Length: 256
Image (tube, rainbow, N blue to C red; front, side):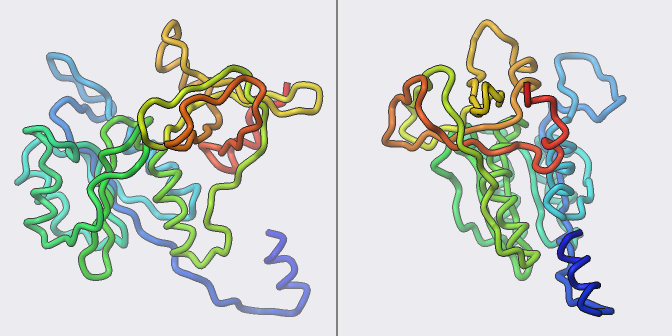
């Protein structure tokens, strides 16, 4: 709004802009249910696709939902064949198990693979490919792992796509409320809550086994990354934290 107001003040009646990227989103997995769907047996409501769709909008993208595909390469391929989106994101099916079919589908579609793993936990099994002008991104089925990978890789890519000069995630300095460890040998993302204590931002990691995963996610507005060569960061240390949900977090009750 500020930049547009300045442009108007200078008498500009029109501005050159970048087209908003179109993002196709497909969730894969036999265990997934659409919202409102019921089926016998153990299943999960497909929330990862909606999560990524909302995050896409926060980054200026236009999401298009392709639904859920079962763990069947033919069904996954059929869902992806006719999409003309600029970026095609799938969730699940990207590991090395017998039911991980996304790499096979990419091969059938002629997608050139640029990488199959990343140096990040959670979210190590993520992939990026391209076919012509389209980019393909395969993210983990775990929504909270996919959220971290989206924040670190897909979000900056969407900002660059739209010509933004600030491509990295906005970060804030904070003090660590309790120690955090990293024995993975990878970058490790730690979720947490952000509090204002007497004028100092304090990051409280959410890694207690005594608290449910849903409760941890609910209490986590931000995350921090531990480098691969750092095994432990002690309490009281200075860390950098990044928002998960971008500008919406300005409305969150984190200031007390």
